Image 1: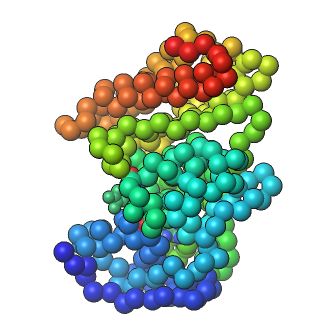
Image 2: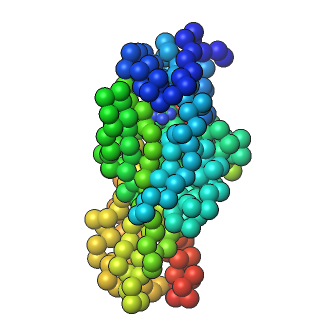
Image 3: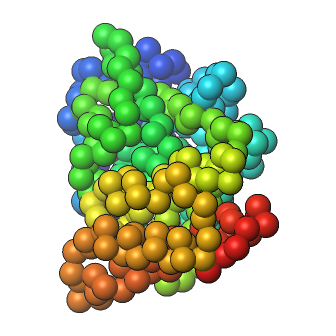
Length: 291
Ligand SMILES: Cc1cc2nc3c(=O)[nH]c(=O)nc-3n(C[C@H](O)[C@H](O)[C@H](O)COP(=O)(O)OP(=O)(O)OC[C@H]3O[C@@H](n4cnc5c(N)ncnc54)[C@H](O)[C@@H]3O)c2cc1C
């Protein structure tokens, strides 16, 4: 299948890209890795009149240490996110998640910004951004604005990015002393999108849990954080019954849509199971009792 005809633009600077976006707005699409957009164009699910290719804008790629944050450029490929020593040391959840995206070829081309803008409900990077409270910076011709990930994702494949805006970078808060993270997913085949994915940060101080962030992807149009369901589990010494109770709380906290191919209860049970696996791994790493 072939896409509808379009005019191809290859800007040499961010300013030029933003000028093109300002000029063509909703008639244009940015292309970064092309791993989602090209199939959509081939299937005529997207027919932009103007394609703005940002692959020459090398200043939009790379991983940088910015004090409290690890800042990742929009054009950074999944494989670079997964293999960066900065993300491995300071945001291990981001590295773990990026390494599970699709297949080798997809990770070589697909980008962080493209994945966030595409906003697939089961996408790893969207889930990690929500779980870690990432800050997403958008640029347009007249300036920049920064959004919390909670305000960025509006629905399945729908974000707050306006037609004349471009994601330029994403800031992920660094993991703090006493915190550990885990990323678990279940997919039907290796490299497929997750049926359910769970991202977790567990913080411990003086043997008690002082932070528990759990995000779930694949259960709803946008990744969900289970904060409200987890309040009772803070300030406790985690043991096997605690792990079982958190798993059950996660089961009850999500409300996946019913589907003939994947029943809602299956996604709920998967969530419960992945949450317990993640907790068990994190507690075992600290020599603590697991369920
Ligand atoms: C077989 C296959 C398996 C896959 N498996 C997974 C998986 O398991 N998990 C997963 O998360 N993803 C998966 N993907 C998708 C992959 O991660 C893509 O890389 C990602 O969804 C889109 O990134 P991209 O850079 O290729 O974006 P593109 O395809 O270039 O663009 C996607 C969308 O983002 C917009 N866009 C691109 N860059 C910007 C920007 N800077 N600012 C604003 N908008 C922008 C485009 O206009 C377009 O609407 C898979 C893809 C394939 C083909």
